[in-house]
Structure formats: C-alpha cells, structure tokens
Image 1: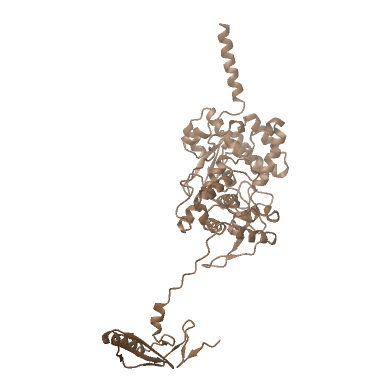
Image 2: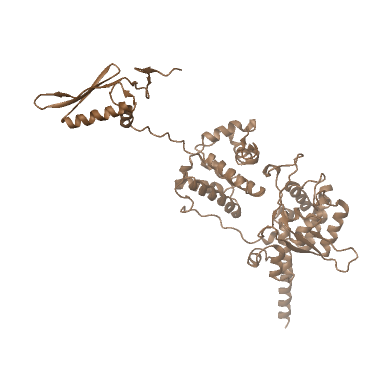
Length: 499
C-alpha cells in the first residue's frame, strides 16, 4: 500500500494533508475603524492568514511560522500551520483499557506462581481449594452439558501447571498445551463466565465464595480443618490480587463470616487398642501380595508413630535392626526425610511407567538435613526383619515398594487398609470411626505411649511435635481403657459399700 502524498511529497499526518511547499509573506496592514495586522502565507496552493491587534503580535506570529519553515517542518494544508501545532491542538487519544482480569485467569496465574516452590501434596491442595471456590465466582450456573466437567476441568487442567504446560527449554516460558478434547468446550464456557477479580471487593460475592468453601461437593458441611486449609489458599490468592493491583485490599480481612471451629483434638473413637491393632495387621497380611508388603508399613505407623510420608522414605540407611541373636532387640528408625505419596500428575517428572517419584523433603517442623530418631520396639523389629527377608529393599534402597519397585500409591494403601478393617473388626466397629485411616494408627501409638507412662517430653521428641501440641492433640485414652477405668471405679465403690 502506497502512502498518499500531497504537495512536495510530505505524507499525510493521521489523514490530514500536509506539504513542505510553504510561503510566508510580509505582514499586511488593514486600515479601518481599528487597524489590524494580517499574517499571510500559502501552503501548497492554498492561502491562509490570521489577524492580530498589534504589529508586534503579528510579527511574533510570523516569526514562529518562519522558524518552523526553516526547521524543515511540514505545514497542514487546511489550517496553514506547522504540524507540531496541529498535534498540540488535537486531543490526546484515550489509552486503550486492558480488559479486566477475570478470577479464572488470576487463579490460574496464582497456581502457576506457587507450583514450582510447593511440594506435590501442596500443589494438589492449592488446586483443590481453587477448584472449590471458582464455581462460586461464575456469572451463571453451568449448563448441564458442562456441569459434570467443571470440577475436572479446574482441578485436573487449569490449576495443574505441570499437566497444562510443557518445558520449552532453558530460560524460556513454558508452552501452553492443548486441553483434552472432552474438556475444551467446558474450559471456553468457564473463561466466558468468570467474574472480574474486582467483583470480589463486594462483600456478598466474597462471602458466597467462603460459603462454597465451607461445603463439600455433595452440599454437606465440610470439616473445619478442610475449611481452614482452603480458606488459607483463597486468602493467599486474594493477597496476590492486591499485589497485582486488581484489588485495593484483601476483602476477607474485614468480612464478617464465621468459620467452623477447628477440631484440634483427636477423636478418641478412632484410636484402637493393642488387640485390635494386632488383628488389623494380621488381616492386612491376608490381602494378597500388596497386603503382605504393607503389614510392616502399618506396623511402623502403629508401633513407631511415624507419619505416612516418613514411612515412605525409610530405606536401608535409616532402618537399624539388631542382630537376631543380640540380647537387646530394640532397633532405631533414623528419620531423615519425608516422601508424602501423591499421584504422578502433581510431580515435576513422572516415571516412564507412570509410577510416582515423590521428591524427598525435610521432616515436618524440621530444618533441611535435621533427623529424628524413633525407637523400634522388639515387636516392630521382628515384623521389619520378616519384611526384609521376604521382599528385600527396592533397587534405590527404599524399604517399601510395589511389585515393580515403584512407590505404593495412597489409593492402594487405602484400599488394602479398608479391606483389613472389614475383615478384622466387628460390623459395628468397621462402620464407625475406629482406625478408619492409616494415620489413626499414629494416634493410637502416641496415645499409647502417654498412657503407658512415657514422659510427654520424650513422646513429643519421638513424634516430631512440641509438648504443647502433643498434650492438646494426642493425649487420648485408647479404645477399651474406659472399661478398665469403670471396673476400677466399680471395685472401689464395692469396697466402700462393704465397709
């Protein structure tokens, strides 16, 4: 396309014809009732002029025009003035406003921001919280064709940075991948119906988001600890919006909303006694090959009070077992790192066969490199010795591994434990909270140590807790102790009545 030219060849300025063919003539005196002085000239073939009340004013104006011509400045043909004066007279164009950032865009950016510094479990927790609150920040309810896919689209794609993006090489931004075909239309709908972040400054919208956090997917009230965890993620995302100047202040700071009270003590109904624990371990061993591999896993939770991530990280360097003929049959578990199990989708790099390679992290409440020794009682030592004799260690030295040498997933561990509970407990116990989770074995261990007379200071050291937390959370009676206590009371009352 050729740029239009006028006169001596000056291109048009924003659609206005200009020219270098400029002549500035002498000032003309115009006599009348009042004498005026006219500055005259010609641009291209068009004459121009303007009148002034005094000769000095006219001369000054003529000087400005001459100076512009000497500078080689083009003149506007219609107005007869330098283009610099035209530009100065024209109104400033209004800056193009960027479209308001939506909550979906912001939440995705927040998940991306946190991804690289967060542990796999934390990544999943952040995605879970954002996927919970985002449906409350839509401008309309999703139609039936999308409703069943909203959760999957958010949790498994939008907020899962490692799945949604791919490495483009050193020092280059990651590449956005194409979403799964069955989610594409739902993702488009979500993008079109996401509220602007600025809407969260309205109390009713922020409160609706918190109300969504307080409910499970089925509409029932969520556990208080779950609400607190998700609210913390939401609060962090809003702080990030303040940092990006999408919000003037975090709207949750002054919002009147009552969160469910957090449960800080272990429900004594979940704690099993020694007889029940032994029955559960035996039942786990009858759940096929995986069950036999997990007997020692469950035993470490019950007899040593270790967290699941700590158990996953045990290896030949951290498990110290005495010789079989040693007089002292106590061993030591020297906990050094933690490997909380998680699915491959939350990791940086999954194994080729899909097994999760959970990265090691420092122990909870410990600095990097800090260790924590935990005693292994003779019963646990015997179980660990039998485990090593049957299964050995994984190629990388880990104590617990699947058939192919990878980590045993949380889901497999949970299914095996559920099957063991069904077999070992009465129907009433199995239907209740007794030892419902593997983590409940840790509760039973710590409560048992306290009830057996071990000092709170020592139990806290073994458990990786402060004494205050230990006494507040774990100091519970094991299942069945209340029966013994009642018998002691009854015996005392009988003796008293017999006097």
